Length: 381
Image (cartoon, rainbow, N blue to C red):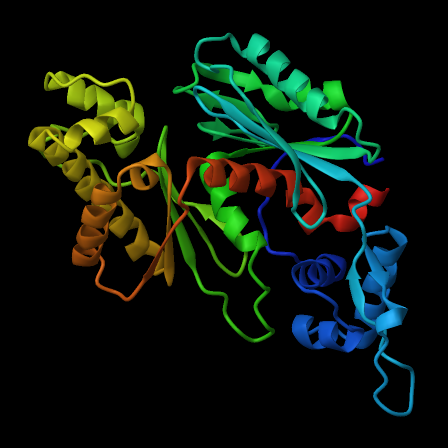
């Protein structure tokens, strides 16, 4: 079993020979060693040592039944990901409910559930107890060992896995130590926005030697608002977004986090005498209420301006839209796209993570697998 330790997620591109080979094998079907040499730029002896170590760790296996013969010399034996020797738990904490799942080494979802407990209505200790019980329920009856647990949450996360999230009512909550004590495995804690950005990175092929990785910007607007991007090195969080300008929503001087998050937006709307408990309800009301539609569109424009400023700093080829501001308001999404094009004139591909469940699964998977993908051999110690 691994040595238990607390950590925040690194969300770096694989850097060790074993991690690079593991990444290519994990995303592919069957590969031979020569293909790994070409794909990674590593020498043949280095790839051979890395593959041998991965096989010893039971992460990779040979397929002699699919052996390829290319003339004289040793036949090429394909390699593939071995049946998962372990399981990895991932959690995405929300304000009203949280997502819990178990993943194998390929990232496939083995089991999942939704914890219908409000993190803002319970004290942190009680909520974490419910979270621990939810993980225990999912692992019941599974014989494979749990080797790590990852948590994606809103707010700020220290290097020791301590969370401060005002939307959850959390101030310096040491969730990492609680999980480490309960499960005796490493606990990886990360903010949700870079975790969602990392899910894109983990599913993308590594850049070939000598090439430059395309930059992907993930822009998130839900119970929080923020952006992160991935490049040759990994995932980076963009600092405070541009403050909201004067608008129909009266957000002048306010940070996007306060003005344009779901709760912030609902508060701005209520200041104008329109009351709703959820964004979904407000979008439905907008079908027959032009004033509400105007406010939703105003939010979309302000979000687009923040996204455009973030894009100008990193010049992405792709912008991934994530969160309920986009998934629950299709009309607002069109307004966002038009405003972004007006304020960011470079060619860019827009891609949507279409549902809340896909957002939470992506975040939970990336924190669950972060250590495996960056230090695969450390889990076999």
